Length: 369
Image (tube, rainbow, N blue to C red; front, side, top):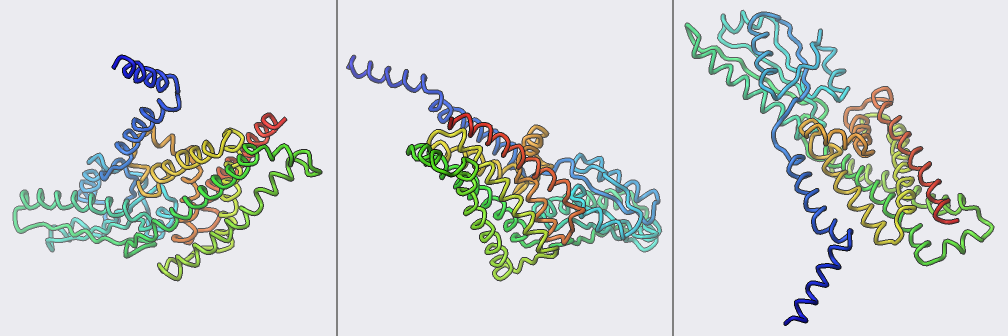
């Protein structure tokens, strides 16, 4: 029995000495509970909305203040005309526009009812549903207060909800762009990191380096096939999403493919960088899957709105390339916007690409000399 206890003690010591095992045992569960606990939220916090007040009377000011003081919404802008609504929603910051009709107070007190229009961005179905439900609930609460204070009859404010870009709130409009983003970064980063790490692990990279080919040519020779195949993947996914789900490309197809090529190039450069860090294929797979899959799903705005997350997760999300490509692909595919609406996200992806390539070149030379 003493020998057995000594053996168990030895195993404990081995586990405690191996930092990688400790990370798997304690670090990953702690990270997951913090991620899922704060990211997977069904409530709404500080959603940016705009108001188009065509009446500008005491009641409209009271209702708009009630909406903003609820803690769920933040007044981002006051619009001047209906022409500003589409522009506001295309900018991605504003999630909904609340419109008060003309002579709102006069109709409510004279006819007993008046209308409020709630227009949301249907390209984000989850966010659109939450926003309309919360605003409708606040308006309903206002109706209850108005009935209690009304001298004669019941005053009724009627919310009228409409969705831009995705009127029927099809979930495919959310999942297809997100799946394209996830697939591209996983395929490109994972496969590129594995193929280069495999050469180093099996000792064949040194054989390639003594060949007439230069190191840059070797890396490009490894990367180009995946770049071409990934572009074919994007085209295939777009065709399937159009034929099977009826998801159109409302913007420029050429711009969409150009942005996809940029994102693929960025993902490939990330894969090369991972290959310079990982010593084995197993390490490359672990870094690519754990380091890219969960953050892309949880923190990129693919499924869960970034606005609902704590501020620290917003900062973490800001250093994730998929966050910006999801904005680009949704804007071009669903909203039909042009380059002027996505140039900032495009510039950020270019910077990510240059940084990854620079780091990969530096580390690649150090490791293979």
